[in-house]
Image 1: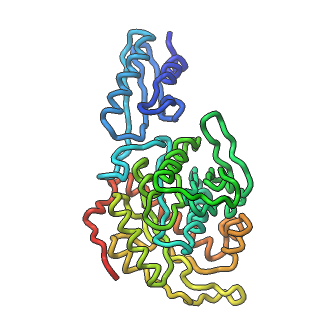
Image 2: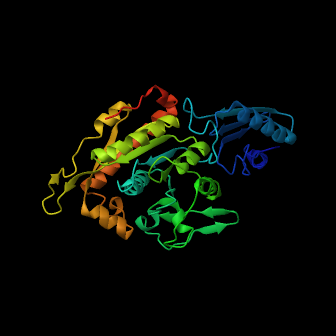
Image 3: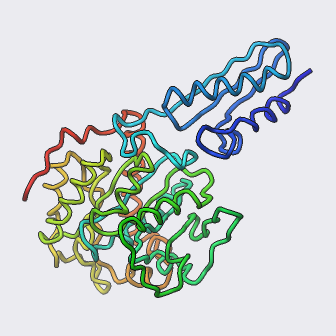
Amino acid sequence: MINKEHIQKKLAQVIYPGFTKSIVDFGFTKEVSVSEERVSILLDIPSSAPEIEAQLREEITKRVSFLGDFQIDITITKPKMPRETSSHGKNVLPNIQNFVMVSSGKGGVGKSTTTVNLAIALAQQGKRVGLLDADIYGPNIPRMMGIEGEQPIFLGKTIKPILAHDLKVMSIGSLVEQGASLIWKGAMVTQAIEQMLEDISWGNLDVLLFDMPPGTGDAQLALAQNLPVTSGICVTTPQKVALDDTIRSMDMFTQLHIPIAGIVENMSGFICPDSGKEYDIFGKGTTQPLADAYQTEVLGEIPIEPAIREGGDSGLPITVLAPNCETSKRYQAMARKLWKKLLEVNESGGVNNEAIQPTVF
């Protein structure tokens, strides 16, 4: 008499197409039930490609039918993918549910600070979160996450990410000598991004956030070609000179078919530590017209606050250092908005960015 354990052993031999791990290793086998005349198997896979489903059905049927003469019922559930994803169906990390690209048109606008605190806020809300520092030329995540000098663990051909503040974290800065300059041409950047995606053992995650280099270059393109990026976030500051570059970053999301989750207006006002009063020294609210033009929203307005700088320098981001302060509350609100957006993208089939026409301000 066969039992569930016998079936599980056979399913552990079914390799997910295009990878070296089985559907059991990936956690895609959700339910197995066995009766005298019937075996029922429920799978939840990340690919909507019909050829993947057909290949899995054939392989499972072949292996399980070896155990005896009974009916095999295979139910496969699949996510609703965006109308046209950035990767055109390619996904080198099928055990991760959502990918968020955090980008900026120019440097110095607080992109890394935003990515770190947004990731921590999502983890504080119960999500399984990973953070990949893809800023090849200026990897700041190790210092900001308090893992500077900490070496990752190599497991054969794969790398185990570093755990920090309930996140799984990896950075190019953790793989090279501290302070070393990375003088890389385009092809080398692309190869580095691809290797960091495939060689890191992330496990099962609800969301993986990418801290991208500023601009619209090779790193962004390499990421978009290897993963179906769920949503993109653009970080900017209120000044018009920053908004000019932000338009280019928003247009990049449009061209790469990446649904836009929203814009983060960083350095939006200054909170005086003595009085708690907020002053709009760089302006405020200037990103709303841009968000309207791209049919998205302003995820949050993050003020200048001394504790943000202190937390970033000390390896204790403000969401950890002062979780109840005004800025941390705004990051928490941003995380909730982002998660809602990710659910909408997965449910509705994405955003038709082709209908959006870039606007000049």
